[in-house]
Image 1: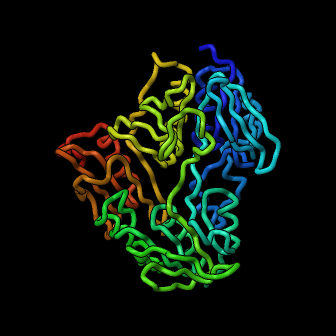
Image 2: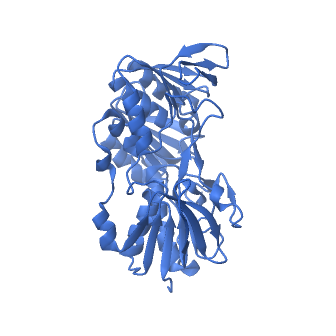
Image 3: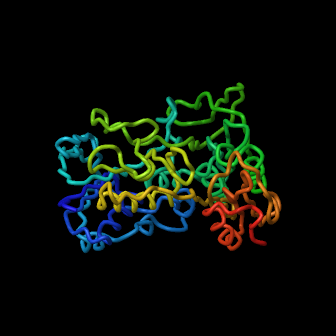
Length: 402
């Protein structure tokens, strides 16, 4: 395939899976991973759960030790963020730290898997006691700040916000979760199911308030509370902002690559630029299973796309494979495991076992007589049985008995 050096911008899951796939496919040329964080590639889902609660240490999150990368001939350049791309010269520019040494990497093939960062408020983020959670440092800093009996306000009732709330309750913290939409997880499951799942908060002592937004964070140097758009105020010793993620695309300005809500690429994860592919949270790609363009933020999507980007880069256009995967995710909160796959909005929900309030619960999402999605709460065995039916969009009449 004629490529002597492949550079992967991003040293998280998508980048790592790309590197693993390249070596597995027999690519024996130079392979470089450029990562903005100083850590070896590590698993992020535990940041809001096991690491935050102290069940595991940060070292346990690494996917591989340094010796593995050495043995695979993978050069790691960590603590260094990409700052620019010249696709004509096939060069990635980077800087080590905010004021560190600058350098550049020549490439024959490039995989952009630089992920996303936590969305931040326009003001108030500099106050002590205000946190986001996206990195090991974020999780450890939040853990150190939380003490039993404290008042925690979590902005955003998505999966990260819910997991942080559940972990905080396990640590003896008083929790209020604020959600701007009419129900939690509305964008994922619709209003009815989202509200039913949101009852987990109340069942475990957290307060959930929907349809409210924070207008300001109160306090001078340190947070003491939040003011809501309806004029009400809530006391807060700690605030966690969990209102989504922003793809890391600013460094691509002037490169000629198309960016929007992410780096735009086709169903083959190709950016339209010779030898340049994208994967993970930064990639806005066409998922042919869904039949639409999405920027997936699921752990499994990142891994799948990393592998596929590597395969397509090696194969060239004639051997391209499309990204055709039913999106899957899981979330652990308040002792419950929520699993979901496929299209879970704008489809009819059919209860197959229990209900969202009477768990275990399994439901299928049906559209035009076809099974296009599934959800389970505390029912991993039944979910595993149902999952293949979703992947192949089986007729709802053929669904198995659970």
